[in-house]
Length: 284
Image (cartoon, rainbow, N blue to C red; front, side, top):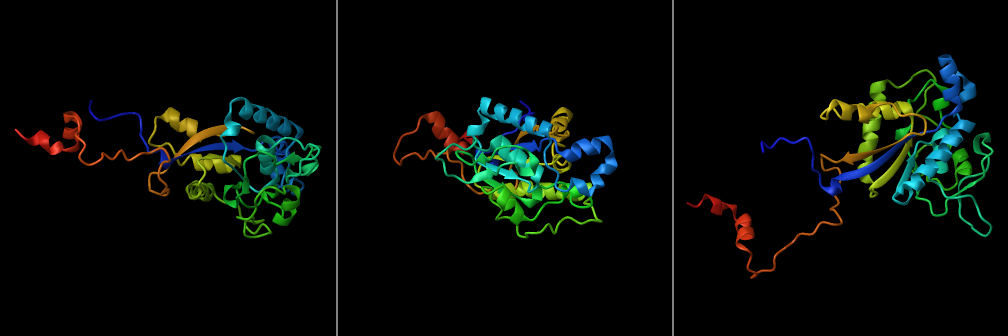
């Protein structure tokens, strides 16, 4: 062997599984595909899901339960916009309410004129809203969020404590983030994931944020792998990735590692003893 390999090995504690999901179809997607200028319409402020979008949510919900993914998820992180939170709770939330069950709702009834029943948080993973995985900031009203105080009433069981400002101070009417700024924000967000203890995480985000962030990765891979990483996500597409810590951002040890210490005085087989003392190989 010449020491060159197409595979890579990483310690388990240096890896997290991140399931990236683009939100389901929003009303802005429909309007914008017909006329790109529609993205500038104030009527599309914080655009909710379409009926087709909710069908996409239902289909992904069935998939993650059928393949067993639902039981593995330890945390759901969502962008704090209506369409991403609707997607998040619709796919990964609990079932509809039953009589006698008193738990907070992940989403109250009819949010965004959806005609959807309330979604329970019973037996669901925790949900956290994070600003840094939002879509391009600025100019387009569909990418501006509501006040957090309003969202708290609509999504009572989502944790908004990581968002510092009630009002959306990040969105500017006359300045839109560049692609490079979005990519840098996305990479910083992925690095932030290493501060979380969870190892199986869902992120519900947006086309632009995901695309420009993922383009930053895979340059050291085969071109086909690079394409798999960085291609655009469709509405309500789920793409599972392994996030690798190459720079000691994470510090926890692996739960399954074992030091394998040999009690003192115990005789070792000669081949193992030689491995522990490689300098013997140099004795003639």
